[in-house]
Image (cartoon, rainbow, N blue to C red):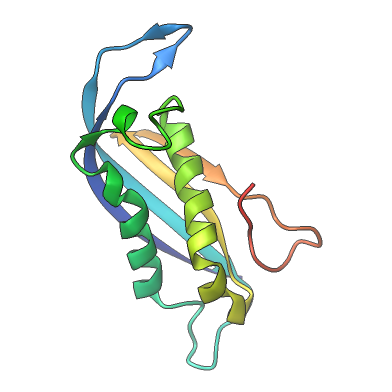
Length: 138
């Protein structure tokens, strides 16, 4: 099994609701890590091109840069917790990289979001039926 990871950072604010109470708006320097995994490499010895994963990740997080997550879809209607940010990232990455990963049968496996040092939320996509092939968003 092979795995590659790509990471990026962005600055954004948010205010989450916990137990019905909205906390004050505050900012973070978010770090996002996305993992791609697969069992075979292509003829060039690659699971996939790092640049394709980097470009997809950059486009997923671009709307959040220097913004309040509460003002940007989907978090204008969804509580912008680190867990839900990770879920959004992994689902969008799986959707955007589907065709790129198809030749090797690789899949987007997870996204981890660090909201503050030592505070990491990870969302893993389930294996498709049969345990192989591409990951698909829920």
